[in-house]
Image (cartoon, rainbow, N blue to C red; front, top):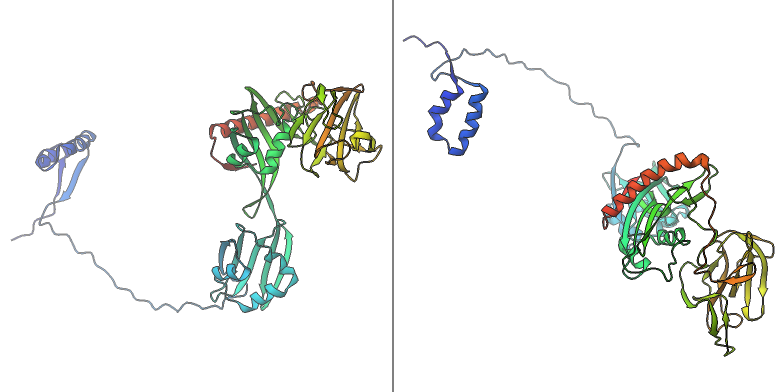
Amino acid sequence: MTARKPRILAQSAAATARRIAGALAPFQWLAIGVLGLSGVAAFGLEPDTTLETVPTVEIRRALPPPTMQPVGEGAAGYWREERILRGDTVGSVLYRLGVDDADALAFLRTDPSARPLYQLRPGRPLAVETDDDGRLLRLRFITGTGALLSIARRGDQLTAATSAAPVEVRLELAAGEISSSLFGAADAAGLPDAITLQLAEVFGGDVDFYKDLQRGDRFTVVYEMRYVDGEAVAAGRIVAAEFTNRGKTFRAFLWRGEDGGESYYAEDGSALRKAFLRSPMEFSRITSGFSNARFHPILQTWRAHRGVDYAAPIGTPVRATGNGKVVFVGVQNGYGRVIQLQHSGAYSTVYAHLSRFASQVRPGARVAQGEVIGYVGQTGWATGPHLHYEFRVANQARNPLTLALPGGEPLPAAQRAAFTARVGRSIERLSLADALHGVNFAGME
């Protein structure tokens, strides 16, 4: 009986489909129909077909054993990282990190240069590199001051060094809605306190954060956050912000000039910061407003109250509301310890009942807007600790809460094009932060 020659069998996909249709579920017909339309053919070998045996050759070759080299001093070990927990000691953290090195522990206890390691703060990371036996090779830790503490082994010797840690600046976005207070809404949005204070300062010329806030007011902020070794260490400056108060929206954009100066401007380049702040204190409570007839608690008579009283604990900082020159600092009748500043034009301000003066404040000294000049007290005719603040125009007292304050200098024309381009990007970030209200995220500058 002669062997049958191999034959290649070919069928059209449509014919194959007809033969196996009975074995397929209805939902599989569609796939076969597509196969038939594509013109693809199925190929195979006829049963009982034999193929020629392919010859094989066995090759054996002796290989040399791998070369073994000793591990050098600079060989990498194993890096691990742990977060400092409340109640941790240096020993407990190193134990969790797998460090088994009595010499290293003795070094960390006795060497003065390693002392910053003992300033443990919950949440901060501690990273170590160890060898197979748990011996400490290197250690990295960001101290409470933001410096980088590095410990390294050279042979059997350990050395510690503190250096300025590389700082990475990221832009972070946040948005919130006021239901009770600015600080409450800022905390809910995850804003650092330093950024919240800046927000009140930036919009302080347009919004009175003591009496104008109401439920439903909204804010959106793009701000800098400084990171060291992946950890947030300090807030930077507000880059862009939007605040809606009583249905009116204000926007502010940071501009850093070529001389290194920083100022906030509106979209059109007009100065956002007025020549004067609305209030001489960052946060306080008004106990007595400007009035032509107020019952004096000490004199027990009705008389005009030509200023605004802000209640605050003794020692609360008081800031100059505008750039000016000190024309009086000392004690003056019912004002107690008082400072009077002369500003540009016919404007002057008075700060009374202070407990003490800032060290740089003396007659003739120049002060800048927002600079601390004194501290709240209860000197003179005062029934409790508070600041009495007066705003005068041509030496006539005016109500600082309702007076239209003069504006600041606009952005120079030569810088408008660059400012406009930057504002466009900042507006996009503000829109993104507002759209993702409640989501905290960060991006690179």
